[in-house]
Length: 489
Image (cartoon, helix red, strand yellow):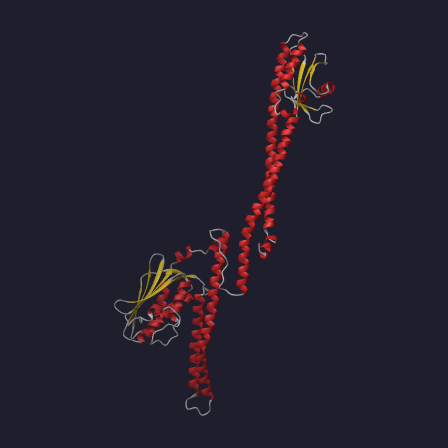
């Protein structure tokens, strides 16, 4: 066993868990034994009382039918000695059992008339006389000089005398004592074995948790590429490990996205900032051939484009990393599309293009209105920038099986076949595009955050078709995060 495993075994929480579990089991098993012992003791006493009651009736019958002559004492004595050999629960290795049974007949004058037994006759007679009459049920009698009590049954003979048959509880107590000793030995073995089993099972389970903690600590200090060991099966520890690995995947992707953002922004900002700096420096030069105001205005326009580029890049990166802040509300997609299309319609008319709207009825969705506004505006702005004059753009909104479809189509030249497979990747744009290649990447990122999908194809008759699918309000409300469901419970 390695040093680390030994240290883990010594300081493991499995000791405390095992001790508490073993203590609960030990107390429970003792209570069970106490009930079992009480049941066995009552059963033994019931059998002894049954034997005493039966034998004392036999002795009473014998005494009643035997003539009171010289043979009376001999006959009754022999019957009493014969009964002593049939003692229940008797230890046969201890002798014939006559030392555990006595027979006493007391005459009508209150004197003992006949005695059979190895005990002291006077002590037995005095003990019986000291006990109040109990009726026909056997009762306990303690005889001086004996550590164990006697169970005594009595019957009245026809001549008025009383017969007492006593049975020592020595054998009964011996049986119960042996039962206690055997149970104690068995109880100790079971408790020890149970402690070892519980400790081993708990230690193995907690060792998996410890391994996860060690690897997680190493990941936090070193790198994000390692993953915690995930045991097989559908147990809680396995689910915990898989959840941690999924979280690490998300963190690694987010950190990687952050590195990509910083590297890309550093590269993309270098040229625009240099150009802006050059324009501003040229505006400060004395005797410049052009008006300095024009250079300053041009620099401000470059700064505006740069600001828009930064905002869009950050939004796309946040959406790709599932960190985009979304404020959902129930909105009418049809009304939103109609309002944005009405705003863009004059611009299309200026370029000699036609914008046609096909909206049949209101469609409610759960979405961030501001983000969705930017998505629709991005798609229409792309059409406005890249569509040749005298072309038509169709915008439609329709419902289809728990989703709302927003579709943009045109009859232009369509997408470049080389660009089409990578259309939603960042910084991918056509040859004639003057943008940064972030518009469609932003559209896809926002739609994915809302649980939807976007598809772009070239139409068979020419032109493009971009279809955005978003869950309707009812479908969005039915989807509940597992953690939210757990918290609500």
